[in-house]
Image (cartoon, rainbow, N blue to C red; front, side, top):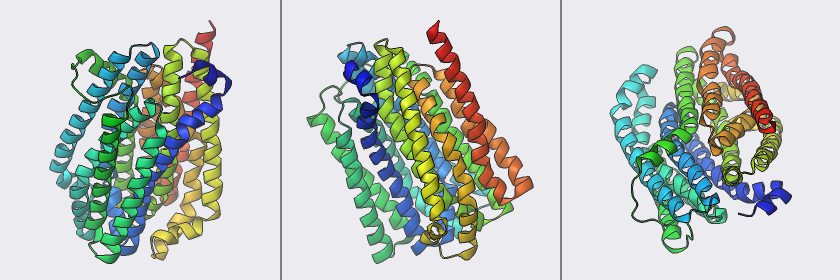
Length: 440
């Protein structure tokens, strides 16, 4: 990395690192949307609801993967910026091993709690059957997905984000083709759609492993000396990402709990369809965060704190623009959007009436997420954790349980924008405090 280039062309450098990551993340999220399309059209609204009930499981995997990966990448990046190539390579190997081990253990534990979770949510009949069929097959895919994502972060750290983008393109195309083959041609239903995701993830893993064995210049797979101190630093530094994803998972569980009891399967289906837009937008934001993080870590490690702050500001501006554009685009096509996934008129109407309200959150959520990434990348885990827990758990849970009592399904849609707006105030507070400290 070249500090002079980063100073002179900050936005260009952010986009150079972020765009391939964004494309990769959007393509990854597009797999979920494609699955939703095929489930909605070939299985039905019960299938969509069943998949949504299991989203907390996916966020649990993402939380563990991001905690280890983001923490490890940040530490490795700062060490690399300080010039110690061998130590950063050791950190890389330990990070990947820890990610894989944590994901496998998580999969085993989740499998044991399928029944109690479904009982608590009150899932019965087709929704329960579809859930079990889909997620028993998807659990191995989630393990592979987490490892792929972790390895992908280090590919970007190598300065080769385009390679990971190409891998994601292959994965998405393969997944969509297999979805159509299994669900549309062979009529294997929701099991076939889950199998398509697993096969695609395994192919992606093979391509990524090829990169590290044949093309990597800094990070190479191999033996390493396990360090407890590195593990502690990694988990602490990535704790905000874990809190963020776990908070999202808990919040999703709370959403499902409230909607199932107050509105029913139609409400869960509508929320899921709207959630696809939120998921894709969050992937764009994460892509910006993952692209900016190595630049921020390197700058901070090189004692260029002002440059690190400039990168944060530029990235925040970019995600705000994306939030506004997404809001305008989806609002214009809100009626058509619901029809794409289901033919049920009640669900379509819920989607049409709620999506614009829900997407107001996009004006704030990107800035909150990037600010959290910034504090993680500079080793400020506490500030990052506060922002993540506020927007993903504490404030959001209050909104989820209180607003629907007074406003019904409209209260469900309002929970996200109210939460992100309050959290935005917290983000501004921490940024202003840091700017004041740096000027002293």
